Every structure is written in structure tokens, then in C-alpha cells.
Length: 201
Image (cartoon, rainbow, N blue to C red; front, side, top):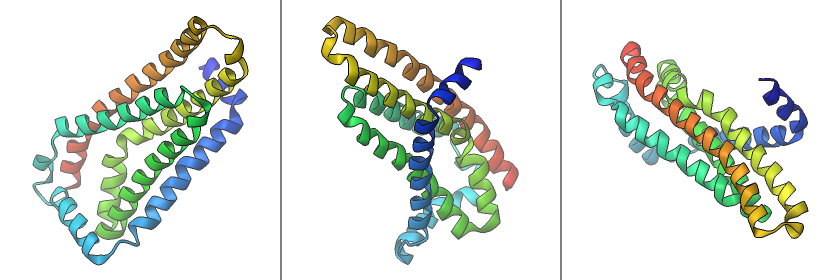
């Protein structure tokens, strides 16, 4: 815990930047969800509505939820590994982080706007289960990438290929751990979501 506090303290500016990128994306997503055309909104509502009726719990498949969330987390971790190859790819990862926020804001905003308080509570308690745990890890991975890229830019010219590989492996291990924790959060969400949907109905 002390190590985490020290890391956050030393990289406070980077964490603030990461948070701004993510939550800016969330706001943009929420605003976009309110500006959909009526036909597009009706189509999306038709997809979501079955999960809000009395038989909703049976429609929610834990395996499908886990697979979808895990795939999303693996894509994010893969982007973190790929973008670490060059400091010039950092803006790409910033876009990926903002896109994560956009997706979250869009889903929450749309459900809240079209399904009232019941839909809002359901969205916050089920859709966001893994995100409550995942968002801090997303921000941590972004800061880790910034720190690694900046260090490599300073030292790369004086390093051998073997040394670069070693540094990249030291970067890879925390990303792997974070990804494993993200997948674990997906498992928790997959188990709890059907229970919450059942309770809400």
C-alpha cells in the first residue's frame, strides 16, 4: 500500500491527466447518448428492454458477460503493450483511454435517459460493477506507460538491444498483473450482474 501511495504521489500530474482524459470521454459519451436520432434510440432501446422485464435474469448469461468484459480488458492491455514500443504512440493510448470513458458514459447516459430511475440504478449496479474496480487500473496503466516511455526516450540511445528487452519486460510484468486483476473483476461482475438484475425485477 505504501508503494502505491508513493507511486501516486510521484506521478500526481500524470494521474490527473489520465483522469481528465477518461472523464472527458465519459462526458462526451453521455452527451452523445442524448443526441441520438429517434430511430437509432428506439433500435437500441429494443435491444436493452428485454433485460428490464420480469424475465430479465434468465436473459443475462454470466459466461457471455465474462467473455465480453475479459475481451475488452485484454484489448486495453494489448494497446498498453503495443503503445509502449514508442513514445510517439502514447497519444494513441490516450485515445484508447478516452474511448473507454466514452463507452461508459454513453451506456450510462442512454440507460438513464430512456429507462428512468430503475434503469439508472440497474446501470450503476450492474454495468459499472467491473468499472468501479477497472477505472483505477486503467489510469494506473496509462501512467505506467507515460513513465516508461519518458524513461526510454532518455536512455534508449545508450542502451543495448538486450537492455531494452529487459526494460520492456519490467514494463510488461505490471501490465500483466493489472490485466489479471481486470479479468478477475470481470468474473465478479459476471456473477453479480444476474443477481442484481433479478433483484431489480
